[in-house]
Length: 382
Image (cartoon, rainbow, N blue to C red; front, side):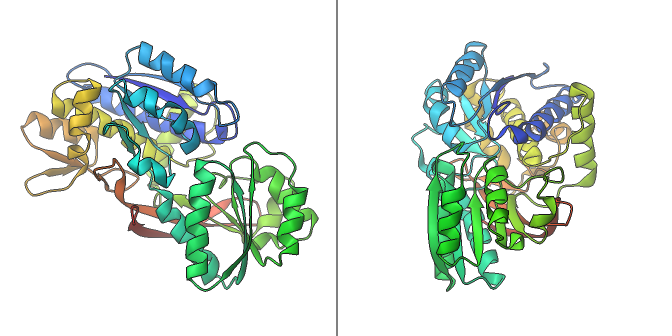
C-alpha cells in the first residue's frame, strides 16, 4: 500500500501541516508495527499542496504522487485546493481521502465514488457556530469571509442559521485568499453596527484581528472557525481576543493520543508539535485506507474504494475496532470490521462523508490560547 500526501507545507494553511503530518506518520507507524497491510509495510510520502493563491503547486504534487504509484492520496487540506486535483486523482481510479475538507459541494462531486473525507461538511460547523453566536446574545452579526469554496460554503450556512435563529446579519463581506489589507472591510463592518463578527479565513486572521483591535472593536466578540483557530500566544494581540470563541471539527482529543502525536513529530522532525487540529482525522483516514486494502485483499485504488465505506460502518455481526492491529486480527479471522477512530465513529455515507461527527466549541484565554468549552454532536449532511 502506497499513500501519497498532498499537504500544505507552505501557504496560508501551513500551520495545519504539522498535526496532519504527525497523524499520518503515527498511523503508518502503528500499521507497520502491527505487520503492515497484506504482510508488507505501508509506504508514505508527502508533497506540498500550498494554497489557492498558488494553484500550480497541488496539481504538480498530485502528478508526482500518482506517478510514484500511490494507491490513495491523503489531502488536500483546503476544499479549494481539492477542487484543483480531485478530478485528476479520482479519474485515475485512485482513492482521495481528505482529513480537513469541509465545503458542502464536495459531497456531490462527480468523483466516481473515489473521494472520501473524515472531516464533517460545513453544513454542521456552520450551524453550530451560527447557533453559538446567537446563544451568546448577539443580535447584529457581521461576517468577514474568504472568497473560496471553503469560505462561501461556511458563510452561507452560518448566515442562514443566524438569521433563522432571529438575529440579523448586518454585513457579509468577502475578501480574496491571501489578502493583506483589511482596513476598508473592518471600517464597513463597524459602520454596519456589528456587535459581533464571524471571521472565516485562513492565515489572514493575523491581519484581520489587528485591524479590528485598531478600531477598538470588542475582541471577545470575534468568532473563529477551523481555518483560523490557532495558538496566538506569541502575537502582540494575544490578550485582546480573551473571551473570543471558535469552532473546530472533532471531539475532545485523548491526551495519550495527543502525546503520541507530539512524540512522533518530535522524533521525525525535531520540532515541538504546537497544534493538533485535524491530527485525529488524518490518523483515522490512513487507518481506514489500510483496513480497506486489507479487507479487499488488494492494495489498489479500486479495491480500497470497494471496502472503504464497509470498514467504517457499524452493523450486525461486525466487530467494532479502534486500532489497526485489532482490525487486522479480526479481518484475518474472517470477520467484517467497523472502525471507530479518535475523531469519532466516522460512518461514511454514499457520498464519502462521515454522517455523524463532533464539533468542539473553544474559548480563548488571556494568553491567546484556545481551550475546549464543550463538544456538540450532529449530523453532517442535513
